[in-house]
Image 1: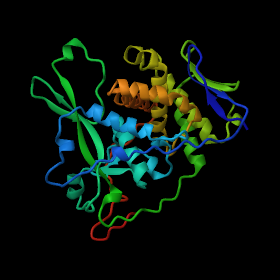
Image 2: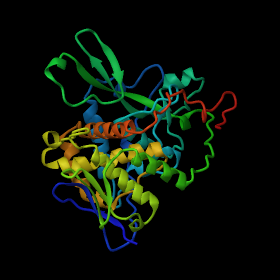
Image 3: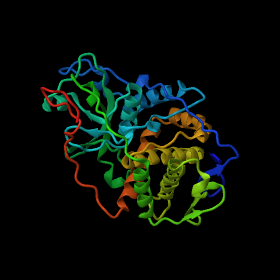
Length: 365
């Protein structure tokens, strides 16, 4: 059976070619130790969180160190499996985290082997009647405060659009960091035993998801790519992939590229990333696939061809402290756009109760 490799050709995004071998490639875990930050006390935040220093630079430097600490076999934190690969969500509100916060929390969960993507602030856990174990360290969350001339003070965990028109320049967004704790850090927590969802159910969901998009998807040949000129996605035959997840992982990757068309999100990265715009688009497609996969209950596979982009991604991150934020924001918009084409609307989020330890008996159900 052939494996998939990727190459770039003019007017084709995310070009992927089926090679002659079938060997799978394990890509290594990144060292995200630097992202895991300490929280000193519930009454007094550490200077790390109180500081108004450049949050973009701080977070970017942490991610750069994590990437550089990797070996030749490279694996991103969104290539995890099980419940930890699901969308991180807030325990108090049930709302999912978005954008760069998803990456930060996935990285911490990957490093700490947390089984559930349920998070909250120290105060929120206290309001829910639970206590953080002594000595636990917090993950880094980022939110944006909108500061305007009318003393407006809104906040969101979704990065604002990079483009700012003349009429909106009186308003500015300020990025702030704040600490988050996982459910596994609660005193008395017991990890749940959750049966895995059957693969055929997950793949049926992805098939229905893609089918609702109305995209022009053609099958044939040995390469997968999105061609903007004809606005179509080209996929090798289903039988050419080593397993169903590989096929649907690749298909979601290409549908994320599909959202870049001028008639959809009109994602033109040349002005921001210049000659590295193609590599930036590949990063966005990887993140978008991971975001959608989290909703579908599966994790994208590690791509051996991504090794060719590592140097370019590092160059982008080192030269632009906001690049990873921008990429995550574009990927979130792509995932939101694809979800918006679905025939049904997700129910309103509700506070997370299942899986929380219930005092005084701390048991997860």
